[in-house]
Image (cartoon, rainbow, N blue to C red):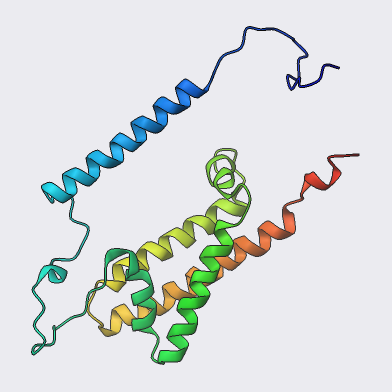
Length: 185
């Protein structure tokens, strides 16, 4: 055993490939892409992600006919809009944020999405697809006027959002075994 050797094959050679120039060039390339997108948006404004009503000059004497939040708040706005009670709507929004946080903390959830679907293990992929469909449906319902049909669909998609998200959390914690505790055996 040589001190400092981390090669699993045990080769001790001076022929090593330096990775830092490659990583540095990828970082510079990504930074340049972000700067180019920022300049295109700020100078030309050809990538609008906002609702046109948000560009109207503010008039304090006139109330807008419809309040439209930014696109990334639309699912949460749909949750607030479809629940009749304000405190219950706030609780649902906070629980949905907590659910998104807990799903983001799952280990290898992206691996489950990518590879389990290929090999036919649908125990994770179908609820994740339903979760994403419910999220996008809430996004669409958030930009609609509050009509009875959209309120009904919004309530159904809120239930689907929570049921599929909680199913993934519970099922993942029940079936996933952490092998890191046996690393030193």
